Length: 256
Image (cartoon, rainbow, N blue to C red; front, side, top):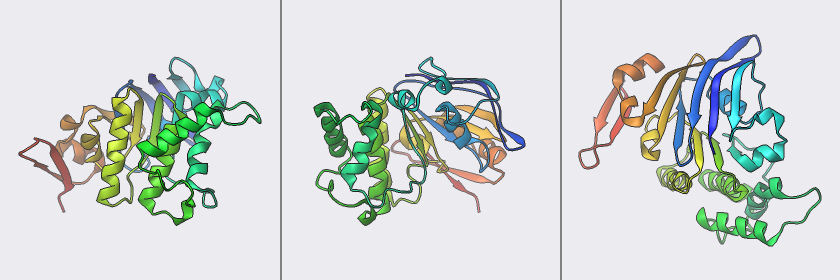
């Protein structure tokens, strides 16, 4: 499933938050969206889902204009995991993961055996089997993140859009989520990830799109992105790059 932003302009309030952005996300690929606060990262994803109107240009989900689709039709094409969730604290893990199947259910319809199997498989793939009956409010932050991602996996959509999926997680839970996300791409899904952690794109094997002031200022591989001069130009702070000899992977940090 291909996601396309073609010269997209989005206005929020009095200003254009996106000023003619063109990008594509392809099946089997992770596209990491990075950039300073206010650069337009979340706006880009929400426009891609048809959740924000486009002032100019066009967006396509698998060739379709998402604004002309019902929310269930959009959901069958792409699952979205926002950075923050509210309103699930009284529900169990199974309840939340099963909610991902709503896009496949007829009005007032009961879940089918296929729906139940999709939920069970998502719980298994995300390491949540045995936790199905726990309330989400009793889970750690990392465990909750796995629940949201499992719900998106249960949805069974060919596209997966994630807003800051590893934020505020300890290294163990970060590693688990990174493996889950990489597995989704390896299975052929189109994965888009908004991230502030500049090392995350390399760990995901992602292509990087950097936004600044509503414009694409870089689009390419993670290795090419890890350049101190380029990073300082985008973020306005000095950076240092370290390279791991065993893997050849580069790591970035602030030079402060």
